[in-house]
Length: 438
Image 1 (spheres, rainbow, N blue to C red):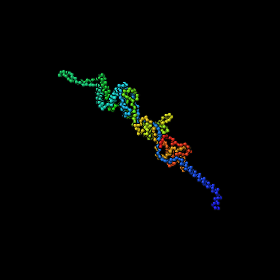
Image 2: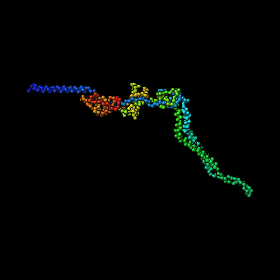
Image 3: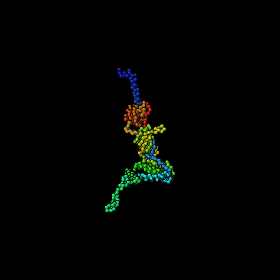
């Protein structure tokens, strides 16, 4: 059978086979073309290593390193005002003084009290000359006492005297004057003893006083006596100081109210002094974020009042106890500004971003590519033009990216940024920190 006859005989089978081949080719071409078209609609980004910075955002208020409001401690008429707003002051500078004639009687009397109290203190803190004189007085008192004691002891013994008397005696040659030794015994009476006792007691008392004085000067004054005398001086000085207002530390006058001639009363506000050499921010951080914040972390600071400028600071204190306001629990955090200038002033409101995490060479995924499927976070990667779900665990996050802490994602995998709808709801970053920046 020739070929023509064979084809003629089996033309139906051959035609059917050709139709199948053509249909299969068309189907395969259509599928391949559809797959290519589907792959082309996916927006992708390769998984890569990079830096990630996570921040905690909050607001706060500027305050001075030290700040004090000074008030008058007594009533009177202002006689002198030495400083005005913006003036620099040193600790101890007298800012204003009241007229002495306008002060209450108790303050006026404090001047005399101060003089007497200082004299008493000076007497306690005597010089070496006083010690030398005390030594002389002690020796003299000792001699006087020894003399009085010896005299008194002598009165306790019977005193016997031998005297020579001239007597007339008859002799064979007639009357003659002959010397004769006679013994006379003397006994003191009670009055004499009493006088001697009094003198001895007086000498003993003077000796004891001299000894105490010498000991006090030799060993230095009694600390309790000095403390008591100093307390009297301080009390008198404090009463006298009520007539003036003194700067308690170095700073700047930020408020000055008194004018010469003003009549003021105790408790009335006078000055405010601020130490502007170091400015602090009092920041309220949510309980959700507080465990991410630690002393030493850097921060960036911006002010609405100073547009276009960014300042820097560092966390110097983290509160241990939170406070509840309108149902929200916040913790106080102190940030110290490191580059504040004259444009930053106490009382200004600031926006603060505390850098709580900074990673390098971290495997990053775009947040918008993360989805949650059956309670697990996944990203879809494009493999052979098909989306494949890859499970991941996330670490720190920023506004745009999250760190992949574990999972099957590899550097270079093409992450689908617009994954298929089957992936259900989108997944947030790590669910913790808020207001992050990449």
